[in-house]
Image (cartoon, rainbow, N blue to C red; front, side, top):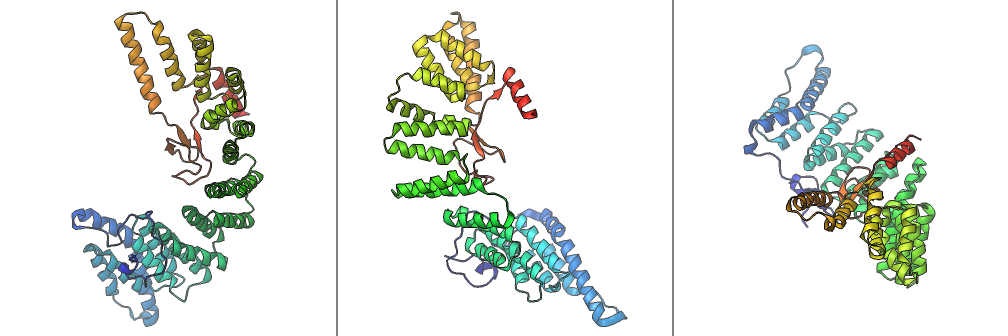
Length: 439
């Protein structure tokens, strides 16, 4: 595979480089003639402060060498500006890097310039600047630590995870920026799905900071349990799930996996027990397990499904359970009983799905005239449209919306932050929820 860093003169090709799709930019020089004067202004705003600082430093060094005799401005400074105006930022970078000799007073300038390039998505230029900084022998230990971390961030942005890993590992070894370096390593291992190394890094982080990482550690064990199940290694999977629950007793995912394993073994009673445990750990997850829970109920020999649904609804009310219970009530007690049940539920929760079911049940009872029917059908259509576009799952951390459950948010990468969206309480339920938040 061709190393993109060779194209920008950043050393030889490194072996075993894994290039990910996280970096979609082009390593060729950015900018085109079509962008016109606005592009020039952008470059001036970006580099003029750095160039001015570099020119000031070069002038100060020159004055120090020549005493009070004075001197004209360094022509390299103006050559760099000309490159900017000619939309040749790479040549401008070369000039300013050479102009500003890296020492204790200019290292920060290089770090800031590289960081600006990375934020603009021009990772190749950020890498050039930070590599130049790391290669200088006269940096202090702390400055080298900052440069290594910034270069690791550049490699991460470019998808060069092997190189980023080596930068972060060196920082951990040097005991510099250890927390950020360990977090960078954890991010790499998560993307590579190397869950064993994720556990190792999580343990180091907890030892370093004293802050618990229970949720993440439990999820890593769940990932390893799923891998073991795919390989048919049931005992290993059970061991990981037990460790997950030991670390985080509220780990819903571990309990769900235990229930699925019980189903696979034909142990319906154990499956029911685990599914009910899920409902206790996180009632909002009940819609995820409800079909399997009812199936396990039937297989375990429990025949009174309506009574079981009513008990579940009393303990763990949820929209999905309301719909199943409404259907069961309709089948055994008739339409009027189902309508009454839905009306009572909707007086406490703004649930579009249950409202749509109520309207469908009420439709046959309408007066048989065209205007009433058309009005009712229009209302039902609007409710159905709103329900169809309502998010099913949402991240509590960043607001990411998903159609299905993810254990790790694809957007902010938080674990266990995506939950099924619950209907908003209204009436007395809203008052109760408000008072609960206040207390």
